[in-house]
Image (cartoon, rainbow, N blue to C red; front, side, top):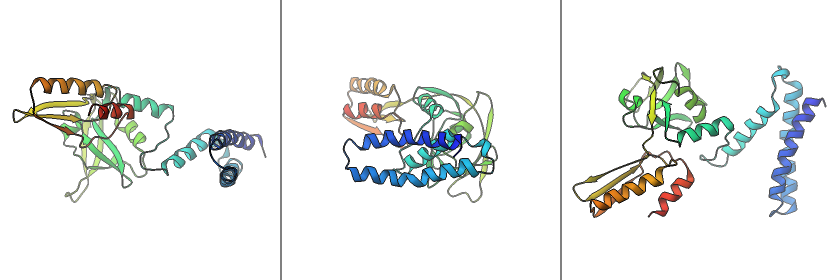
Amino acid sequence: MDNKILKGIGILAVLIGFSIGAIGQDKPREIIEKTYQDMAPFVEILSQIQQSYVDVEKVDSKKLIQGAIKGMVSTLDPHSQFMDTEEYKELQTDTGGSFEGLGIEISIRNDVLTVVSPIEGTPAYKAGVKSGDKIIKINGESTKDITVNEAVKKLRGPRGTQTTITILREGVKEPFDIIVTRDVIKMISVQSYVLNGNIGYIRIRSFMEKTSADLEKALKDLESSKVKALILDLRSNPGGLLSSAVDVSCKF
């Protein structure tokens, strides 16, 4: 084997060793041995790519292994995801309070990039984007097999710039384009008001860093209004920080 193959297998061996060490704390020996056996095809394929790929000079072992990790984690359930450094920074932006973009919450549903909800008052909301819209193209490029993070990178951009999204909407026969001008999007996590004079209404749009504090303030405001009942609206909430969701749950 050449040095590149040995290097790639060396990186993988460290990863295997780490995972096996964790497994070995509470799993029988035979499960550990089976894990080694199950990893053998991966090591072989990695070696073959590094040795025989048509453009071997462009093979990046780290990129290959990260891709494999993403695939592995995605098989667990629809909500588990591996994030690299850049993707983690995007998550911090999402939960921090503001960003520059269109103002839509998106997810992958049935393998299609789908709008969970447009944020009220944002460029996307004003342009007519609706919950459930399927985004099949961004600036003329297909979104087939795109990830949420890849889509976010394409949709976000400096304030005042434009992007074109091609929408497939239920009840509309043909796809159509919507041109949206990006702006600063300020995330409002909690909205509240009084219905019919004595019913408190609180909507939690997403679970951000400040959601728990904002909810606490909303509850106090409603309490001072002497409401007799409370509606907690979580519709179209795409999720967010688990710690924030736990804090919100603990208030009830």
